[in-house]
Image 1 (tube, one colour):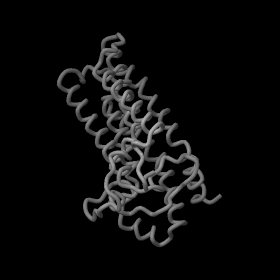
Image 2 (spheres, helix red, strand yellow):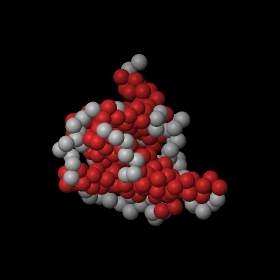
Image 3 (cartoon, one colour):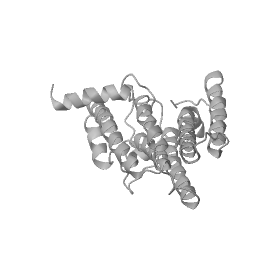
Image 4 (cartoon, helix red, strand yellow):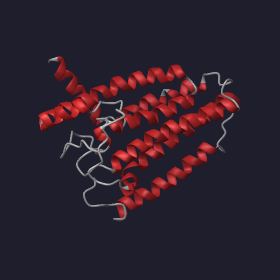
Length: 247
C-alpha cells in the first residue's frame, strides 16, 4: 500500500474514534498531577495559571461554537462512521482556516494541559495531538478533494489548514445561531468542566494529601452538568433548539 493511501486509511480509522481516543491521553494527566511538586503553583501564581488556562479553553469553546453556529446542515457534523460533506463550506471561519473545529479542540485541550502546571506535558501532548489529528485532517482533505476537485484546491490554497490567517475573512453564508451551538456543543462544555475539576481535585490531593470535594471547580462542573441535562432534554424531547437548514 502506498504511503498516501496508508495515511488516508489510518486517518479514516482515527476519524471514527476521534471522540474516544483523546480520553486515553487525558487520563495520562492523573499520574503527572498526583506525582508532581506543585509548590510553585500556590497563591497568586496558581490564580494566574487558572485564569490563563480557563481563558485558553474558553477561546477554543468559542471557536467551536461560532463554527457550529454559522455552518449549514451537512457540514461540520459529529458523524463518526464516514466522511460527510453535502457542500464545500468556504465562508465564515472556514474562509480563514480549514479545520476550525480541530483548532477549537486543541485550545480546549491546551487550557486543561496548562492547568496541570507542567509545560513539558503540554509539549508532549501537543505533539501527540498533532500527529493524531494530522492523519484525520489528511483523510478529510482527500475526501473533499475527491468530491469537489478544483473548487477544493482553490479554497485550500487560500485558507491555512490549522493556524488561521489574519485577513480575508468572508461573511458566513448563514447568520450565527446560538440554538445550534447549544444543541451541539453542550457535551464538549461539560467534558471540559469535568476535566478542570478532575485536575483541580488531583492537584489538591497532591498538595494537601486529602480529597477535597468542596471546590469551585466542582461547583462549576455541577452547573455545567445541569445545563447539559437541560439542553439534552430540549434537544431530544422538544423542537425548541431545532432550526431548518441546520444540522
